[in-house]
Length: 346
Image (cartoon, rainbow, N blue to C red; front, top):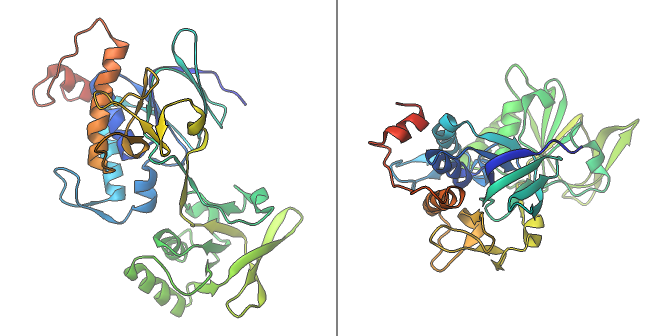
């Protein structure tokens, strides 16, 4: 289904920390924007891969987790009321006769934007899925790769595939509380995990207490009946085949960065990264900016705080493009009445 096009001054691709800060900097310049991200929640790889891990190099914040940083950024951009379009990936960009950019997503959404900001990290992060032929037929009904949600497993026999923090935390959450699963099974090819030691210890304690179980094995097939997934076929560490019954399968196999259609957009690239100028972080196409890990230039450092700097200069670059007849003045949030109005604190 193709939806009616959304006309906007700015569109940001990527809702990670740098993309969210891009929204903030655009808001300070009086530019409202829409945001698209392939994940179904804001935060990008920071929230997905480092949600509970410490970050120490954000200016003015001695310590925070990845999730806390995302939550702070979301509070910071709240005055500008950006519209987030999550769970969809940009598939096509085309220059229009009036110089605007027509941007389409795989969900059928279309945008007409004057400026485009690519803050897509190393590409669109999409959840890795279990590689079994035909299993995708159950996506969204019994098989889920996106962020775990309790309503999927309440009262169901749940299997969680994975060996990192997300997999173990999902099992622990599903094994207790008002929306607990009927049974919880953690599936991984071997009895070794990359999760934090404290989570691994909690998982083992839960297994000993009978609240969940761990099954080692490699999925090799599945059994279904009348359109319902019933069990996974496993090759266990002894080389034997066994069956693992389930109602719901939640995979927590990490994220896979996919450059996808970005490589076909005609932008100058070097080693799968977008070349930009450091005056305003514009790409080879007028009106298209690239900030964060997706760009490259001499001296580039892949740090969140560097992305914040890039987003700031890109926002000023957008103002110069959108309002060429206006003189762009540098104003300070400490003293500018205009910025206070935009922030809702006047």
